[in-house]
Image (cartoon, rainbow, N blue to C red):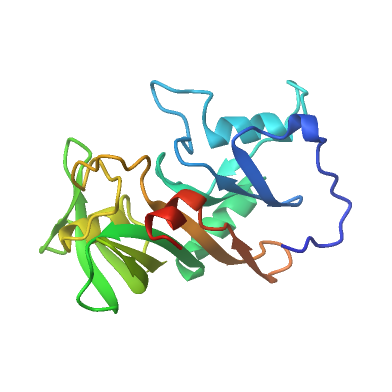
Length: 235
């Protein structure tokens, strides 16, 4: 991503967070490629090994008294890799979240089986139970409308590589939609089946297209498909 001309100065290498690749940064936004296995935000059990915590430390440039901080715009599941964008002010956070439905989000997933249709759209109303498991319901008043588009990019053995367009951003949306189709994401311990030999959830946030909060310039960020997902389909 080409960076705009500005007076912004990126902190030195010694402050860059481990496990996160910075794709772009300016005074308003910070865009990273998150590795699978890293939480986006803290939980009751884990406070520091998260993208949010590590990047907050990064923007402080080693100064514990610094007022610099980042704001959460959206999240990725712990086991999902790929693009995350953070705001550097409440104003930018609100702008990005208000316009989030209009931004383009593309994912790649390796799923089990061969899909009958090589291209399609899945819609349902998603609800969540007390065990935090998400599922589809028929009653619109009991779930949130969810829409997922997909194209089959490659098939190898019993796996299919899908390019997925996320029209809505519900919790676990991609994982639930393909599991309910009978094609769970490889490595999905919650919505899939026991995958012996699969080392990670085969889901990756690959591209994000936004309008910059200050310039309104169209910006496209890309995070290359991880080698492990490529190997599953011998790509």
